[in-house]
Picture 1: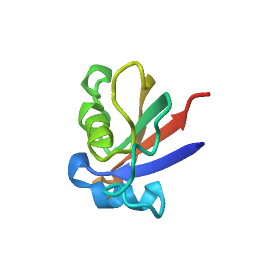
Picture 2: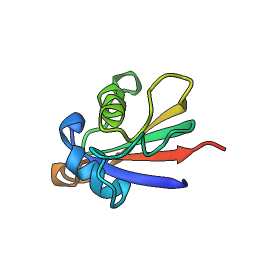
Picture 3: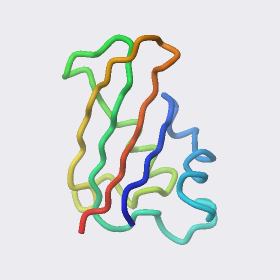
Length: 106
């Protein structure tokens, strides 16, 4: 399946329409199964004007949103091999965003 990139805001579970667009032409509502049914690695990159402490970074809502939207099968260790968090400093709040990178594990 390769790598898919999703840029989402803070209300991930409500962004299903956007996730449908990046998942391909097939609607997630009519898809028979998740976009990624194999094991995956997830990298969450936060572009922030003010960086957080390392222990203040969490991707729980984002990953739950991916499961809810049908992008990944489940967030259990059976399907998610690894989750990495990175922060990138940007100059302004207008540049802030979150990027989610999902890689299928062979």
